[in-house]
Length: 365
Image (tube, rainbow, N blue to C red; front, side):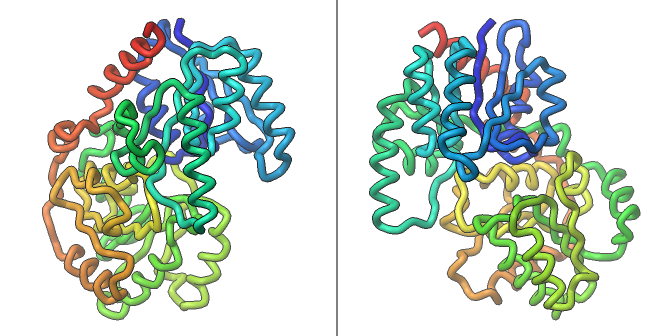
């Protein structure tokens, strides 16, 4: 059996973890096993699903809590695990796990980048480039979620491979019965619902999203905002919503394992994130037949898998965002986009077999 150790931040339903579950559920578990190092004591909502597929989950101390303890615990898992492949999803920050894998004589070491840009000072940029160079030398294979993420982390490395964050198109495919049921459950049958699914961090730009919604309410008072996810800035955003006096129009859902159903009930997906590697959630929204607005020159154009998505620059006046949202809230017929998603390489039923073959080729190469 081929044993792969994945190093991730958490298993709490984010894009990377959801992608890994989508792939692993469709692989031959007699031939390949995924185990995980995750950071912190929190048991993520996806852990039960992975353990039911015989994955082992190792919780290590987060670096911010105790840097040396994190290194010691991470090294112990890698050193004792006898893994065929270590697959680190930390991009340029994956120096230590990849180093430990090399020290433990793990022959196949994958560094996988999921970010295309982060705000950084000149010195931070220099440090990142040096770190990227070292990590690239220590690793044997280089993956990225898109071409922008590949170029940002691996530069001119022509061997770096783009791995599509494929999704279950059948699960997201628009269903009018689910839409009616969810909207009735939340009492929004006659309202326009704008929604987003994202961790509450500075990156995801929830405060600006709320500002856009606040302006939309002036023109379309019958509009509701659904915010799905958790994160360190959640209390701040709740307070901000309350300070604007729109808390009766904003619903916070927390972490959910049925986001595909909530998307059915939305009328517009909006996420003005500040930086992104790919942004699989934009593809999920389109898979649900949902009109989608993303920030231009931030979210890669690889997310344009249907004609449902449009882009607005973060440097544009907020009025442009508001106008684009109102235009997209005008009635439209939801459609099945599964063929378009598959054509662009994001159908998990097709891509999972490709991924399994990639692991096998890496291990035998």
